[in-house]
Image (cartoon, rainbow, N blue to C red; front, side, top):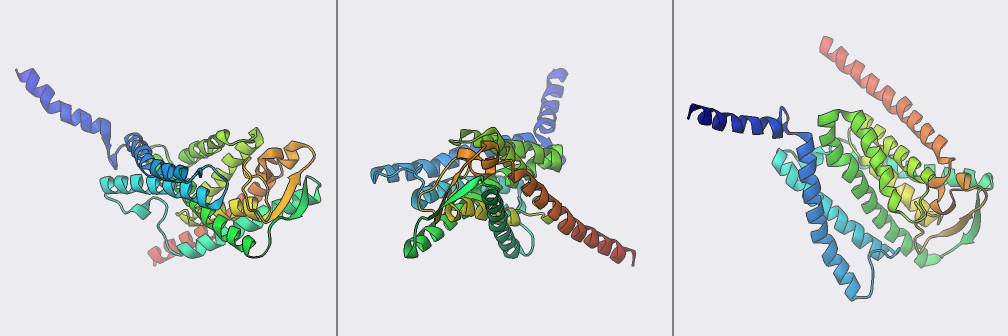
Length: 313
């Protein structure tokens, strides 16, 4: 009898140690719950939208702003709903998973400008080296404006979804379990692997996607939020897909401003993958990471010295 009482008393304590750590629900269980919720909420938003479009003889997989935007919005709503539930469980504000901080709009704008500039520099260098060739302007006038705005909205949704999906709740939670840089490496590799399903994707493109993921993690490390990465991600994709009309991880959208085609060795031209599949993207990403380290690293050291001086005084 006493043994039975002891087991009954120890069982809740054992379960608590399995599921709960010093900082709440253990990271692995939290991510597991999040993934289940994400699947349920995404299906709840995605399938009604899919059925609605199919009734009008449209498909969410069509490379047009309306269809692409509807699919991305459904995915983003599912992600936010799952994150809200986890925030309630963990008693944290939703923005605590990478969306907090000051100067959020300014950092988003800096990232947006940086993304367009970086992709345009890459396209320009590839053109000068003979790996890309321009076919001319594809659309004009009000049609160009409509598609420009439509694709901006789509890629803003893409930037929000993909950054918050891997470097929002999951990054913050996994960091509790294995530390920031191990989780950054793991999730950047996952970001690269997510591109495996893209048509026309290449090994070089998958590797460069993983490196891009690490660049975004570096920005998160220095800035403590995702707003720069969201802006960069959105404008990089917009410039790649709409502005220059190159393939984006093997996908070419309809209604792009310019038309270009690759030529020469696919390791340098990117082939059907686009500029992300070119080896020329690798030094660009290294340069971006070095600029981050020089600018933001020095700023962080200066802030740290200022804080230590204030404390000592």
